[in-house]
Structures are given as C-alpha cells and as structure tokens.
Length: 74
Image (tube, rainbow, N blue to C red; front, side, top):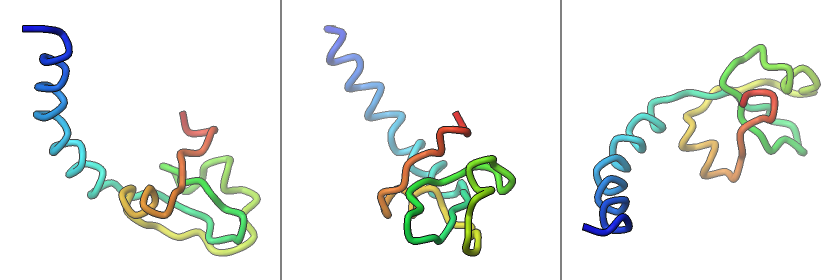
C-alpha cells in the first residue's frame, strides 16, 4: 500500500471525529468591526483590547465566519 493511499485512508477515518469535536468546542470572539480571531480562553491577551462585548460560539461557527486562531493562543 502506498503512503498516499494510507494517508487518505487515515484521513477518512479521523475527519468525521474531528468535526464532531470542533462542533462541540466553544471559543470566544470579540464582536468589534475589525475582529477576525477566535480565542480558546475568555481571558486571552488578544481579547484585552476588545471595545465591544465578548461572545461565546462554537469553533465551527467561528471558522465559518472566516475567523482564525489568535496568535497568543498557539
């Protein structure tokens, strides 16, 4: 079995489980007009300058909005 076929097989098995985990995971976002990131922790350093309210939403929803992980979180 080639490596490519093996990787595709593993990805097919793992992907549905990853999606379920992401759908259940909640993240925090700033609802400001320039906000583009999501945060795992409500007290993340990246949320300190939020001038509006901080909201909680699912990781899946945040990604659908085009948000990316805050640089302070990784």
